[in-house]
Length: 201
Picture (tube, rainbow, N blue to C red):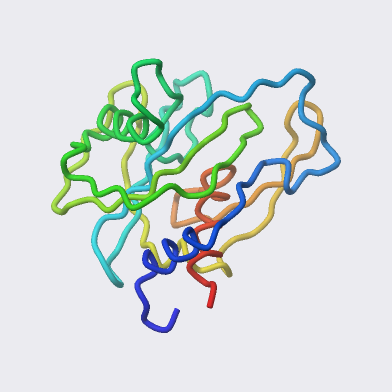
């Protein structure tokens, strides 16, 4: 990246226009479920710090949850009727899940949307977080809040394609492990899109 600010490169790529992604991109032979209706959702991609010290804040979902237990995720969730827009959804959820005050967040832009295999239309909201920030995990939903160096997540060489069986079919997905954390699925795909955008000349 030649010393350039990776977030500036990502924002420049957004200005140039980027297409959305889908879990189906790696699984073209598996058609979407008949009558599928996508539900809008927003997630916050919170970046803390700048330059080589920049980190992305992620969560580990509680193992007691019905949906996606124990998985690594961005703070976020489905859009509520009272949310002004998808940005408000992401900020509200981040406040609820990790105690992040919206007043400490500088929203930079919206990353390409992502359709999940669980029928969500997810808009990732890229943002800088004012330091210092001490997370407070939402009891019962978030098991852990942790940080991953942005440089690790923007290195395309760290991503791999794996597969597992889901509802009778083998499905392929991206994974980008970090230490004890297995980052995969929609979270890894969104991060990989950022890596591709940051790597553009």
